[in-house]
Length: 115
Image 1: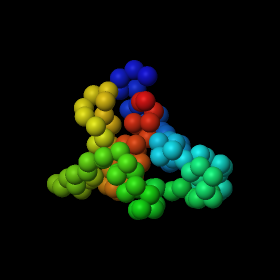
Image 2 (image 1 turned 45 degrees about the vertical axis):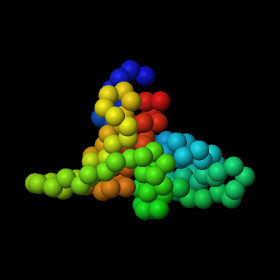
Image 3 (image 1 turned 60 degrees about the vertical axis):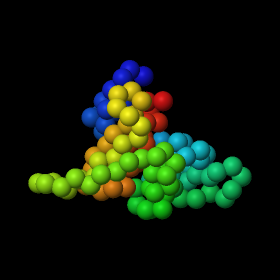
Image 4 (image 1 turned 135 degrees about the vertical axis):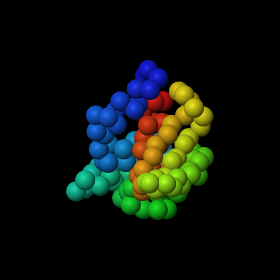
């Protein structure tokens, strides 16, 4: 994929479900289905779980730990979270959102698309 192409996907409107699936794959989970718009996944032979890092703080923090995500809370006219994986350019991923979990999921999804 060309440098910067992952940002084009977000301009076209990647859904929460698509980003969640990308995060599940990045965590090494096997997607076993969807139920009412939620991702069902499992790791190895373990039982299936509902994977929802946009709403589950523990799952979002697992993404942060796994990929060494750095976060900064910006303030000013608009309070946002800025999260980054790796460095600048094609070797890193960055996202900003008022919701920390959303910023984390978007950042990991961008990284997964770029790899």
